[in-house]
Amino acid sequence: MSGFGESGRVASLDALRGGAAFAVAIAHYLAYRGIGPFRAEAASALAVEIFFTLSGFVLAPQIIRCVRDGSLATLKVFLVRRWMRTVPPYLVALAAVAVLFGQAGWADTARYALYVQNLFAQHNGVDFFPVAWSLSVEEWFYVTFPALAMAVAALARRSDPRTVAASAVLYIAAVTLARTVAGDLATWGVEVRRVVAFRVDSIAYGVLLHLALSAAGTRPRSGAATAAAGLTALAAGALGMHTALLTAGESTAAKHLFPFVAAFFGLSGITFAAFAAPAVQRWVPVREVAYFGGRISYPVYLFHLPLMMVMPPWTAGLPLAAEFALYLAVLTAFCALFHSVFEVPILAARPRYASAPPDVPAAPEPSVPALTAGRA
Image 1 (cartoon, one colour):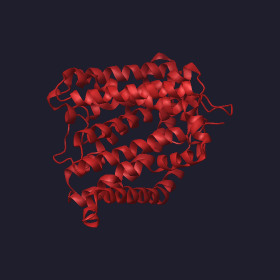
Image 2: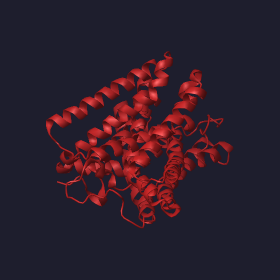
Image 3: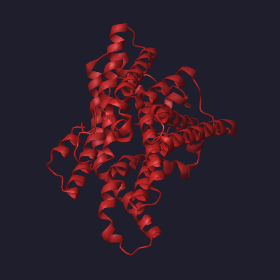
C-alpha cells in the first residue's frame, strides 16, 4: 500500500499537521477562558514546534531541487509557491484581526504584513496578532536557508544532499551562537523564543531528518514494534519539552536547552507519523479525517483568534461545554469553506517546477523520505 493519497498527500503527516493546528486553537481557547493558562500555553508551544520541524521535513525535497539545479529560476519557483501558499490567507486573517482591534493602518499592522514585527526583537507596540510570530519564522526560513544552501553548493562545487546537510548544520550552529550570545534570558519567552533571528533554525532540523531518513533508505512499517518505538520517542520528546517549559521561568539551562528539546519533540512526532503512514492509509475513515485536518490546518491556525474575539455575544449564557463545542464547530466549518473558496484556486495557480523532484518514488511502496513528496 502506498503512503500516498489524494494529490500526493500523506494521511499521517496531514493528521499531525491538523492535530497541531487544533491543539493551538484549543489551547488558546482554554487560556482565554482561564482554564489552566500555563498548561494551555505549554500545549500551544508544543504544537508550534511540530509545525516548524514538519515544514522543514516536507520542504526538504524542494530545497534539494534548488541546490541541485543551482538555478535562480528554480529558487524563484520555490519562493513563489511558498508565498502563494502562505501569504494571501495570512493577509486576510491579519486584516480581520486589525479591524477587530481597531489597528487598521497602524505601523504595527505594516510590520506584521512584512513579517518583520519580531525579526530581531519584538518591534510592535501592540502584539495584537500573536500567532504571527511563528509565521515570520517560516517566511524568513524560506528566504534564507535555500539561498545559503545554494551558496554553499556553489562554493564547494557540490550539489548533493550532503551539501544541504552541511548547510543545515551551519545554519543551526550560526543561529544557536547568535541566540546564546545575544539572547536576553530575562525576557526569554518574548525576546528569544518568539524572535525570528533566534528561532529560524528550528525548521532546519526537519530538513536534517529528511536527509537522515533518505540516507538510511528506510521503508515505513506498521508493525507493533515500529509503532511502539515511535510512540516512545514521541512521549520522551513531550516529557522533555514539558519539563523545559515548566522550569523556563527559573532555569537558565532550560532556556538554553529549549530549542534542542523542542526539535527532538517535533522530530519524534514526524518520525512516528512517517512510519505509521501505511497503517493510517489503510484505515479509510481515519485517512479521510486526516486529509481534511491537513487541508484546513493553516486557516485554523490563522483564524481561531478572531473567532474567539467575535464569539462572546453569541455564546452568552451557554454552558462552557456547549460554548467550546460551538467554537470548534464554527471554526471547522469556516476553515473548510475558506480553504475551498479562497485557498484552492490560489494553490492551483502556483507555478510548477521544470523537472521532477529529486526523490519522487519509483516503486509503489515509497521509502520514508518519499513521503515528503506530497503537496507543500
